[in-house]
Image (tube, rainbow, N blue to C red):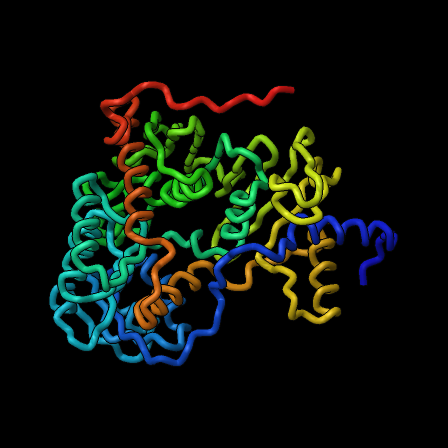
Length: 451
């Protein structure tokens, strides 16, 4: 039992703050945890059973309405591990095109090196299969067009991209807060994914170096921006509500002198049509700040993080933010007040919400958990891993005709952020998105509010 000197008045005050700041009963956040209807089983196969493919397989093995009928990998060791992980005796393949000939397979999941994504997506769509592809969706600018054309030619087939933050209840709640005005006007995003390690996998046979460590080589890889930054440029696009207009950046191979071709550190600044900026950093020599995004508006700030199955979010209200009267059109939630705690220390946001069908005791327990989290005494996590959510939702889309959350257009915008930022670093120049290339005047400036 906790032995802290907490008064009932302080507890009630904190509960009221959370009810206003976090409860938000009218949030329009899609329920990604709904129990599926028993409408049959989706048969699927996977191409690529390396490290990422294995993680997807572990999640897919828990989806009750999916059945793995085939796995494909050119590396026998990984193929064997994949078969053992998923169980059920799926048919093994070395050539994915042979696997696509199966008539009993509804969908294909692609978790191969990046340079293979586009051709496999187009081939799978042409074979009549639904497709899940890991981020980054494609490798080159030309492939963006090819995949979008392929998706348009097969409109009844699902094409989903592996951007799991789109399937995080925490992130979806945060974006709803932004849409309802919780940050005022979003002006800046700062994001980073910092690690301390060489990013290299052990290779026993030197002949397999480029095959196993493909992320290190430009022929196959988009480097840190593709493998890590793609997640966070997508978050910025989502929060701001558009894709960028230009990017500048600098990268280098400054720490790991081991023959790699991709940068071991990158720093980029993206500019958006409304003047918003994303400042991005990824390094491999210090892990202190880890993966996190800070979304800043003139009336508040959100700090979000998702590393593995857990996510954390904090909200700060600007001290100068305008407090509106109840019923005002500018008010973003009912009955909200700006508390000193929200301004100075911040308050957590959670995927767990108060719902009308909860009992009195359940509501009190939820409020108590939130209060304990605000003091740092309790850690409230997402109810399920967002990676599992996205895998389950993909199979639901295939089975029930739903639309993916991370679709081809979101995947294309995300891929362009990777492609153009790498180009900006390689060519040490400012790179514009094609639609702005011939119209390079300064973007609209953010209006400064009078004091």
